[in-house]
Amino acid sequence: MLKRDEWLPLARKLDWDYSYVSEKDVFPEVASGRPWLPHKEWKNWDEPYRTSYTEYVVNQHAKDASVYAVRDAVGRLSDFQRLASPWLNALKLHAAALPLAEFAATVGNLRAGRFGRDSAWRTMATFGALDELRHTQIPLMVMHELVRWDPQFDWTHKFYHSDDWVAIAARHFFDELLTAADAIELAVGTNFVFETGFTNLQFVGLSALADQVGDHMFEKMVTSIQTDEARHAQIGQAVLENVIKHDRKYAQYLLDKWFWRSWLLFAIVTGFSMDYFTPLEKRSCSFKEFMEEWIVDQYLRSLQELGMEKPWYWDTFLESLELYHHMVYISAYTYRSTVWFNFVVPSPEERAWLRDRYPKHWDQIDAAWDRVIDRWRASKPGDEASVHGQAMVTFCDLCQLVLCGGTPSRNTATTLDYGGRKYIFCSEPCLWIFGREPERYSGHKELVKRVLSAEAPAALPELLTRYFRLTPETWGKDAYGGDYPWLQRPAAGEIG
Image (cartoon, rainbow, N blue to C red; front, side):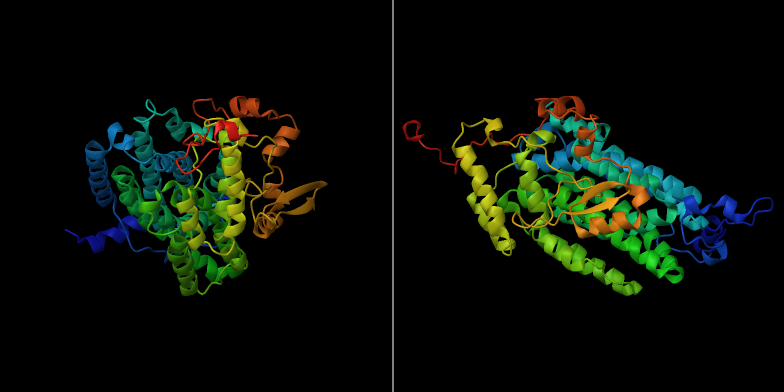
């Protein structure tokens, strides 16, 4: 009987020559990616896991059994009801943003399983597709039991089937990365940048906070998913090394493009959770500190090992670490009825903690919270309309997110005239990405343009219910109705 090391290469390397069609017909550039290279340039493609199907099934069965065991032990409704109210909104945000995006990743990996340029790559992509199905099913299973208690958890499944402004932005990101990208861009953008770089922030950093909060079901769920990500993330570096060898400039562009786009997404999904939804006494680090450890240090080290440059906008990125997620959070708080989870106003102690972690610009952010708190003081508890924006905000024509770049006193929004139309962007990197591929992005309409073209209603109530598909039970509110023990309202005789 052959030993594993003797038969596994025979099972992984199954490429052959084509007799009646050309190699380029079998692997067209539009699907396989550029630079298009003959297979002889890919035949040494390899990654460290070298998993066989039998090993894959055995390992996945054990991991699934472990998740189910934890669910039976600490995944009951009563276990979630004991968690801090702000943390539950981190769950709602995370659960909606990622499971069906993982399903889109199934499609992307299946395409790579057909159009990847080496059979070993295609095998690993096929395992990756199975992984992503698992990553879709686990959160749907865990959150399903919570819908009868809190209908906002229904957005775990509903989110990507809506035209909520956050869903528009998330679909714009994931559809391009996972279903529209060719096999090479998928490998670099997803397997290297997204999974090697950013998912550690979510699945390791946020998992550690979940443990501190006492949410052991979430902790187990994300760490189980991360064990899969670590394996098929290896596809990325193996592909990237070959792209660098043949087209270094294009490799640099893919790295820089998907780093910026991934950063904007994680600033919201993870930044909100770490700095606002994690109870203060459970916070071990700020979002910025997690980013500096897991992204700034480790990602730059990965680039250096490959001989690549850090993104040209690196100083802009470092500056946005101090500001961006705070700007989006307070903007989203002001328009909280447009999303499916609730928000909290940071307490005086939390604001002091944030000032200590973000000293460079916190004074400006703090002043905005002062105005929010003053409006709550002048209103009755639960009077959401008195502390809510009414005018439509503006969105970036590249990332589709609100124009929250820069500071409250100096926004970084910029514009570009293209094809007889003016486009607006939240930042120079978004403008740069659009300028590199305008035909890819110019036809997309962000929310305001949908309103102006009458595709979406302009009135907020109709926008929420008819277009975003929210209801009074599910749209976002202040988690405490503005009734905070530290928020002292004037006595009735003192008002006016």
